[in-house]
Length: 443
Image (cartoon, rainbow, N blue to C red; front, side):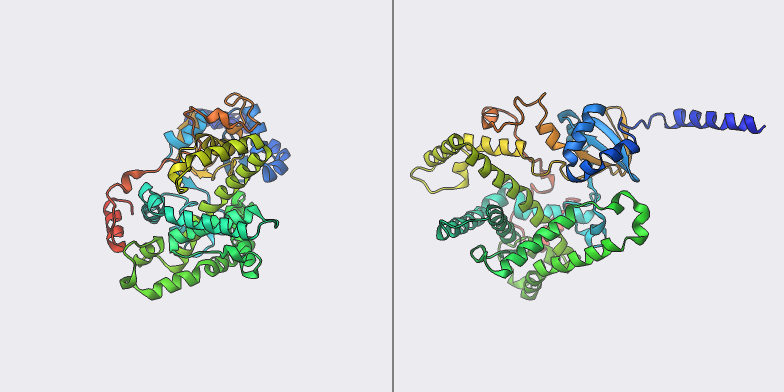
């Protein structure tokens, strides 16, 4: 009898697995033991490690890392499935464990929100209307020009001295987004030798690192009960976020709604909705700061480096810009007509992908991709670096060749935006804007 049970139980198990769960076939991939041999590379150079694995298991693969199922896309067609065809299902993001412990973060995260909640839609709508729509970008052109001229002025007064290009670009971009969001500079770009400047730069960099780094507990939830270090890091980060934005928020609150300008900024509008706390506003502002500065700083610095390495290209860019603005004042519209310069930007984005794995996606429900099942809560990674380095799609992929983008329909700078929430929103007052956003079913 015992022998019969030993034989019967495995058969029943296989029967149930095949007929009840046979349609839940995961994408191919390495087993957990094999993944451990790549662990060091996955920690320090994940895009390269995952590219090597994709050459073995294919452009769509999966593997278990602790308790977390990882799904990786390494080709344009598979990436399109996740980022366009099934964009809604994979629109969630994975929050680092540190982030989970920030006060109010679940109702104020814009970039790393685990799902498309009502508060997420509201904040995205306000950000689109105030900062990122075509109309807002046009009306804020003076901000970008003013901050760039501040940078040029600073460089002129320090001619002949060593300059930290990355810090200066970061400070300039931070001032652009901070002025668009709060009508205030975040840095004094002329005071780079001051301790206050250095402390603020270190603070922002620390917050960026902690908000974008996944920890051990993210892959082993069993450790959450003893995860005291994440809570400590979260409270430390909370204090730094409030140090960055708290004073600006309190000052604006003290002004009252009656003193708002005719063209309110992002901070005016979120303060007009009493449902957002000071903590939540600070969280939203720091995420927008990270989104507007980190990748753009990396791309700008690499663009300058590549042009300095290729003096002929640098001369060509200079001549093209000089010809475009001859007799006119320099503005963004004229720069958009500099096709070779634009090609250099696109090639920089291809060769030096600022976020090689993009932001980790989260499947908010189970979905089928290429006849494979992607279970709910899977972490989906798009290996943009591997796609940009694929010799099947790029000739001489490791070389900097802007010419490949001349007369090309490929545009890595294109960002899809959902305009349906914003087409009817013009010059509204803050409270009326929020009311209309609610009627448009965005919150």
